[in-house]
Image 1 (tube, rainbow, N blue to C red):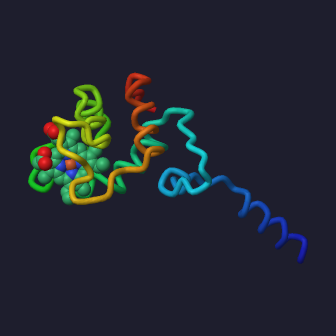
Image 2: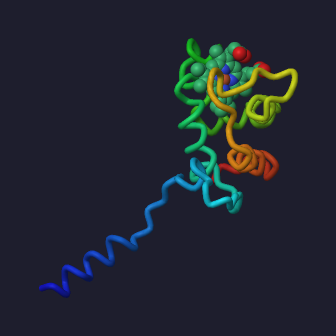
Amino acid sequence: MKRIIMYVFIILSSSCYYDAADLLYPASGVCDTTPTSYSQKVVPLLQQQCYSCHLNASTGGGIMMGTYTADKVLATNGKLYGSISHTAGYSAMPKGGAKMTNCQIAIIKQWIDAGTPAN
Ligand code: HEC
């Protein structure tokens, strides 16, 4: 019986559940930008820092995000990267919040540079 419990514990603790902790808190100093993944890497960041306003035209100043198609439009026209990198000529985002970390910006840039794959 003890043995079974131990196996269950091992299985549970080693089951690979992906979360974005390394993206949100890159305290390890390692910035892992590969593989590029919209759903696994880009969406968690946007969800945490952008969708609160941009799922809604009224709170997002008319800029819609939150679907692959909408996010791709902003990625392709340069506004996504311009705003998160605080480039002159773009509104700095997230509005009223701290700039994304260099790692988070690099992850999004890599997705853009890879041609915004829907993966
Ligand atoms: C607190 C609400 C809020 C949050 C959070 C927020 N935005 Fe915005 N965003 C706005 C509003 C309002 C506007 C329109 C007014 C303006 O441009 O400042 C806007 C404008 C933009 C624009 C257009 C900028 C331009 O120069 O044309 C982009 C792109 C954008 N946001 C992306 C983002 C991204 C990416 C994030 C997350 C990193 C984010 N926003 C977070 C409220 C927000």
